[in-house]
Amino acid sequence: MKTNPRPQGFSLVEVLIVMAILSIVMGALYATIFGSSSTFTSNTRMGSIQEDARRALDDLANEVRLADQKTLLVSGPTGGPNGVTFNVPTGIVAGVVTWSSPITYQLQPAAQMVQGAADSTAQNLVRIQTGVANGLPQRKCDFVSQGGIVGPGGVVSPQGLVITKTGTNLLITLTLTIQDENRKTLQTILTTSVTLRNSS
Image 1 (cartoon, rainbow, N blue to C red):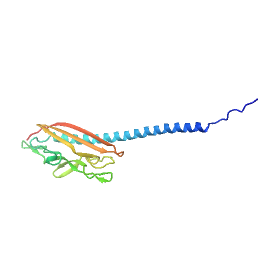
Image 2 (cartoon, rainbow, N blue to C red):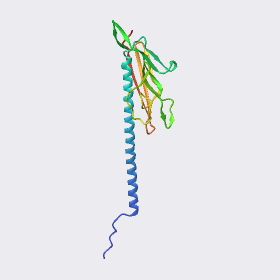
Image 3 (cartoon, rainbow, N blue to C red):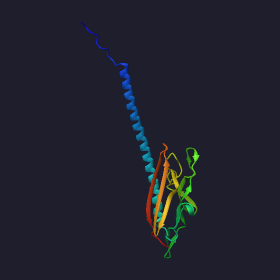
Image 4 (cartoon, rainbow, N blue to C red):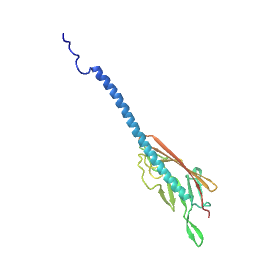
């Protein structure tokens, strides 16, 4: 006697189990890829603001290093905007050092929109000499949240530039904060110490 062989194929229960397992695996794979992409974007943006902060801090340090110690003026929240004003040597005439017109690095309010509303805390770090203000650096950053750090790109908090003078040394701290397109807050704090070299 011949028996009927078992029919070939999968039962409905087997198909549903495979679909459930496959959807779990695909969901985990999607979450991993999306998380990696978000982390990569945040790390790229963080690298960019650190580069901008370092460039601005280096520009400020290189110039203030040559400052005349007697004319160097550090200002803070009680004495106006955080910043520093100084003169640098421009040459020697008849054996006498000539000095530049005053140079000021300070924070100034920046027009910035955050989530459709004006952000009154946004600041630009600017270099001012003879009344001309230049945002630093002179390149545009590609942050979603525009305006702020050193030139366009982020936000410098009101205490984002702190300069402390002790004798002939300056300690300069620059704090930069930005919110990326995922509304994740990125912050970098850079500090440098400068020894002043000149006196009039």
